[in-house]
Image 1 (cartoon, one colour):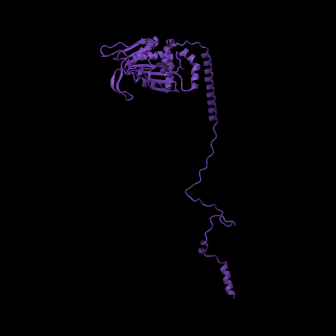
Image 2 (cartoon, rainbow, N blue to C red):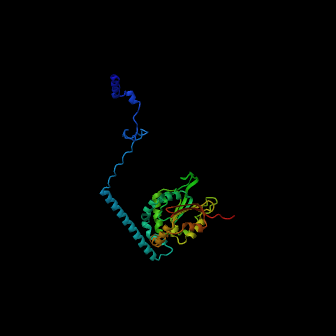
Length: 334
């Protein structure tokens, strides 16, 4: 009887076989009684990794802070200087008594005119705008208010058939050019520039001291059948601002250009799209006109409409202060 008891006791103390213990896998999550494993569950997607920790940002160096502070101080000082200069100019402008006709100022500014406007025209890329305008000039050309000849380099002397730089088909280039300005000093500068720019040319070129409002047709060429002395193209850049009667001048120019196919090309500066900028132009208009001979706050669009000329093309740049027009004489009723 004792032997079976000993056997049973030995069996109780014996370890379970490995197969028995493997039949019950260890739980993957902690159980309520605390007997389960203490490790956290593995991620479902083994390809996911913890995002890298963000390193602490480096502190701004005192040198950078000093540069930033000095720059801010310099900028604020410059803005203050500009505002003070603006207020001083406004006060001065409002105290001036400037005549409506300021065209005589160009006799005093002719020698320094190019230097005065060179930087502003480069910043505003006026060279490309002048070149685009003059590329339309063809046939017998009249340029009024020629100034110091800032358009000279863009003229194509001599006529040709083919495409121009805009892909237009036809006869391009100038058969003759006449330069007119009210300032004798500016006409002389234009004449000297032309001689340097075109030392050899075969087309007739004339230089005249004359008011744009009084120009007449060119002399009739008897070798050309049906020639009536009209110009094929009239050019004017930055001229309406200095004329005492810009509307009347435009109307007159419409009588010297060929009635059917002739064009009047304008590049002007005047009022803006924006009221705040127009207020600045108005506040400084008298001082600017007295110094430079230019009323820069004129409404170019209204001047063109009042002239009665037909608008072929209109463009504006620089907040609307730079105006380009291609005009034709008003169509005559048959």
